[in-house]
Image (cartoon, rainbow, N blue to C red; front, side, top):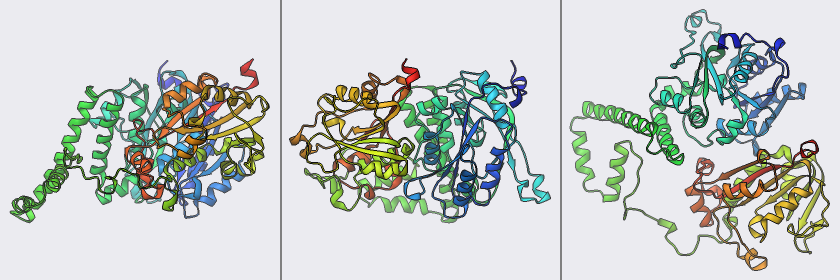
Length: 562
């Protein structure tokens, strides 16, 4: 069947429509948000839900989103980050994905609008091409939204840059994007299979610049084919405050591309593709962009200040070698990696950690707790009904709120005034089966000598469709208090925790992720607090430095277990 014939299938002719979760992140978008939401409400396709994710707005857009959620509670839900902070577009899209119920996910930027048949035609297409992990189309560059007749002449629908109406194999679209032969898919034109988006870890949070969409597409196309349609389904609003316009105005686009190409190289190494053609292309493109930027700077200096380059070199010769090396790599546009002997440890050159109290004595939140709270905030909707938390009820109250009907606290030893159940998860026959809608187990598993027995108990005491929210240590110092009291036995990785959980929970009911990077891990081992790192440093995720492992596991419903 040709794509043209597939897209002729409309809502009226589709039975058993799959649910599409539409994720709209917004930040101070009061001017455009209502029109964006209305374009979803006007879809000819009927089976959708809309998730409005507030990225810390300070204008009236928060009120607009909440009003729509109140008027359409069965279709529209509102979310925000804990503390109503600004976390960035990628983090907001991930938050929406974590609450999505549909097997298909569509993204829509708050300043864009969809044409009425967008979902109907895209769902028909992606259902006909089951191998496609992502579908996208062309986007109209929309200037005429201003109402100015002269702007109407500027409206265009740029070509894809790849063969229209084609299924692009893994790596194929990424290669075309790296060489600039193809345009990157506009996020508002995408329709993604949820299982594929989750398998690649969603959007790359903390990624700087304007290339977060290209990073997402790159991760996805390394794993799955991408369906490129020649149809136009969206209007991409051109205005001075858009990410593209701001980057163009301040001249940051080239540096953003250099950062993107460096990330691509590092990611290909993590994917064991260091010797691939893609890595070579990324390296070649990076050298071209570095060289181009360096040529312009040198040309400007030589033209405006003749002899300045020679003077700079002469002045640099009196600087210490480590500083000269740093200046040379920065001048070339390369990442600075100090050679052996040039590394300066500063405050970290010490045999004792800066703090043995996890940063609590430094006026801030421990770094692992920052990640724990981020994980629980993303799954706050699962903390409901009857909830059991091990140790205390802090997170039950913080993230469950009014959705919690009854709160229990399990503790291994008597004497905890908040404990309603005394018991050991490895031997807890007195704890009732099928009793809890949610169990919260944070930083406990490493202290249990038989974690397999504990997971078996957790599965037993959860109700059908109940959810386990679990975190465990990856990279960490020893907790001396716990070690001497009942022992500290384990450190986990995503693979070990996945294997442990899937021995009791179904494979498709378990999602495991890691948090951390080399800087966060070093800071955590030294006992620094979360506020001593920048947010982008905390939020950057490197799967080779797994400081904290977190898992979401759902017990099958009664029907599935029969």
